[in-house]
Amino acid sequence: MPNTSQLVDSIADRLQTVVEQMKQLQQENQSLHERLEHAKQELAQKHGSIRELKMKLEAAQIAKSIKGVGQSSTKAKTQIDRLIEEIDACLDVLSLT
Image (cartoon, rainbow, N blue to C red; front, side, top):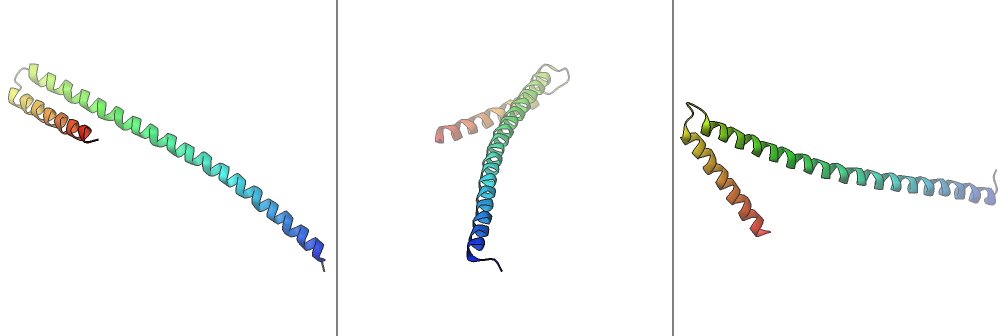
């Protein structure tokens, strides 16, 4: 049967192992948080790029419909009016912040 000194040493060794594992897990957790934050920023940039490309596509489609033969200028005017309303709504939101 192990004596008290050996039990204390065994418990101290196990405690040291647990402390080392905890430190390692904290470092890993910090690293994962940093990666997550980076991924969120990258996603936000991608969403911004998509939004910008959609606006460019829509502008190109409007330009095409304005100068296209056989296209109704009413459709183009409607699209332009809708875009102006959307821009106004964005400006309103920005002015609130």
